[in-house]
Length: 109
Image (cartoon, rainbow, N blue to C red; front, side):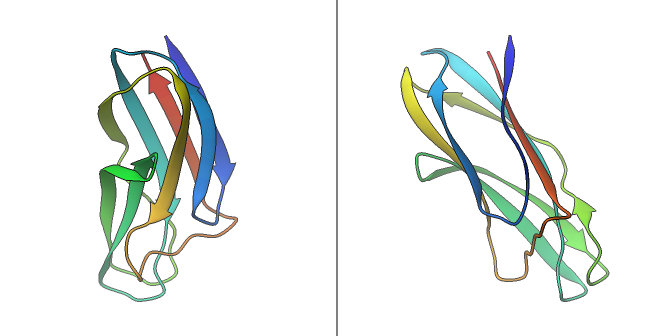
């Protein structure tokens, strides 16, 4: 079973409070795009659950001001039932997002 919990445009950070669906391992699937004002730099996005980083997604930005799709991230998480905050955020000072960037998070369980 899967459930889309975030489907939003930027800018980062974006977050949602959702009821965690299982006490078993849940696969958190994340996609999104970002860009940089600086050429030849790494752009990085953190994936956080309850303020704890569970993974990062990154790609090299050769050109400035070009929106780049990050590689899709899959992160296994074991949690408990209850409200859970999922947040996507820029992980460094060169990572930028705006209303032209989209973000999706799905839970697979």
